Length: 535
Image (cartoon, rainbow, N blue to C red):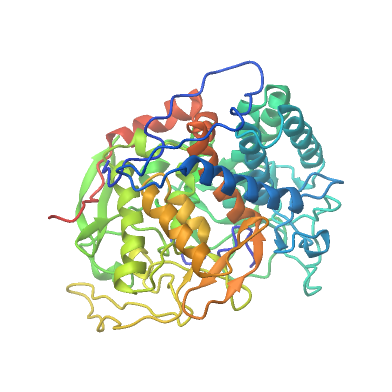
């Protein structure tokens, strides 16, 4: 199965200030009945290098990155529909646009257009016109009417649902993804809050999407998605979770791990009242440590059982290089840090997410620089420089036993699970490590100086930068580069840069009163088992 987040997480059973954040001095955005105006053009900072490691002129560097990254979106969008393609070649020509797009890509374009406006790259009028065209096309997209959910693949040139895969002519099994619909709804929510003239249209589209249709109350978790016709998949489960009036074919798996990007769909569903708040406690921080039933996972966690709102939760974390970190499923950056581009988890949960997010970045850094010795860091699903698409990550930061690996050779670490199984000796060397720039941008909030230094080194040492900003992925030993731009990855970069340059505009857009009242009380009471290394 292809996924527009491009990562088949099918195996998912689914405030520690390490540096001064770039956002520390940002002021809250004010509510207005008119579109926000672009930032003052030409304003630059010229301070000397500060304690956080930023070089002189850091704002100018961020503005350069956001301008070039936006240029890739301008090239990816079909002028007839306002839909972005899934990916485009490094030459940014119309001929190199992919013939398919997804709900995630559309959501990324919507929020990126708001960033372009708020950073002064385009006018408010242009942003409104672009987004209006996109919304008009989205209103006409074929979707699953009983649930209001959108299919995974559309033709960006026509808006038609993709029935035959353009790359190979194979028939498409029409899938409706909880992850992808979550990111489209996020883009619609940003539109609703940031562009008053389009608020009603965006609101109607967003609220017609029922995320409760993914929620399985028996497991207190959401499914990966469903097919509305028989997918010829033995693992598919026939059911109807939201009284849509007809059974659909759900994926055999649930998204059971909390620290993965499907939690955005969970948050939207909880905030809308479509999914009960208890679902937040139904996702695993890690699996329990008191039984060998979970010994197929990465390693034995540390932690203890706690009770919140009457729900028992195992507050577990995985030990890594002297730190205790709540893992993602596979060990990648975007699983952990795409959601907090929009939801201020670290602010609402200072003893949970506020501790874990910076530790997760620290773990990724230490893997790339110290453990594997690549000289670079930032591992996340991306294009494979050798061709195709692949999941990259830090194996030990993933809950799954095999996890995602950071090099082309798939060098993994077979850790022991105390009392249940023995591991193998740790690898003494790694191969051709693959880094993706979007992972560094995701780390910008938590390790700003280190993130910019890593990006600067990647740009200096490799043919890693083009007219649309950083290319998608770089193999650090061979020097092989994937000279493509992916709308998903560019969208993460735009969101990270937009928050850095505007004082968290996107966070303010998504952290509505509805979101805050539903989610903040859950996050505020939780204490993760995460802990920094003892000096």
